[in-house]
Image (cartoon, rainbow, N blue to C red; front, side, top):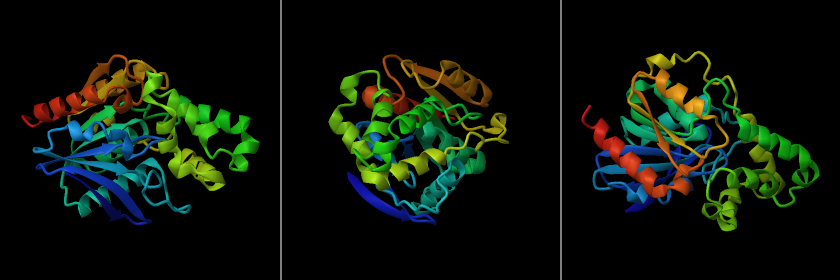
Length: 279
């Protein structure tokens, strides 16, 4: 069973797709340049009689509202997510999140520990340098295609397309039709401007001051071994700094593990939920 929900959270509404009817809540967060659509092959493979999965479009992403005056940064996104969980009457959830979404999940765990039962962080960025190689590449592409981008020619295809294609290990996992699906919110000049707003909202120092040793929830850090955007040392270091952190590698997957290996991703989440239920 799947349904769609709109949740008012301050500057607008979040779009959420809900799967299943179980007692345990699992929140699925995408990263930069994607949307909750990322989880379309993972969420249905979870044990939906035992869990309810919520694939969230972060504010300003996917089908969620956008507001040029809204804060789109990590801490603000964590606050919007916190508000959304209140509206859903979810007291505590397992949060599964990819790249930028992983930073949002960490911010939520640091802000409201009681809200997070456990974390699964897939190719998380360096908490001390959130603007990683992907956003540096986006800036280079913006400079190279300045004229086309300023006129909205091809929308954001010239900018975001290469990042999406480099975020999977198997090119067949990111066909042109799927690139187009992720580019849908970034049509024309307005879409290009909005993509720039999302990029600028990623602040390197957004998580400064967080004592990672105080984040006590069970945390699985998942590393796609073919991820070229974030060095493998980042995942290992984060797992070692968290009280209950552990590292798991997924061979043959890059940043977007839910695209490269949806079956493996679903199995990891299912196993993790079963393990943490015993704690």
